[in-house]
Image (tube, rainbow, N blue to C red; front, side, top):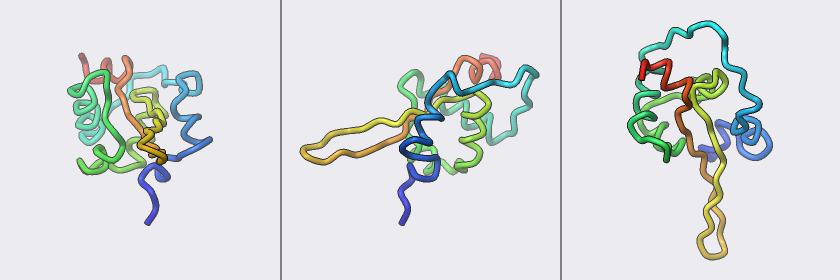
Length: 106
């Protein structure tokens, strides 16, 4: 079974997603779908700590929709490594951006 992090893109591809410099938000106002609004609302409720990609997927959000939020500058994704003993576990944490807050009208 493929790892959840591989769906958004681990390694070098994830590094491109997590860098704010690589995101170029659209100049025009974006019309959010109900699903995008629900995702951004969840991200806004959890605050600055963000939420893991696995929990977003468990809440029924599709990977492609999450990638779209990140591409449009409404959210960020950061690859995190947790070290437990000799093992390292990679995790992707998703956070809302100021642009995402603005799109919600917050």
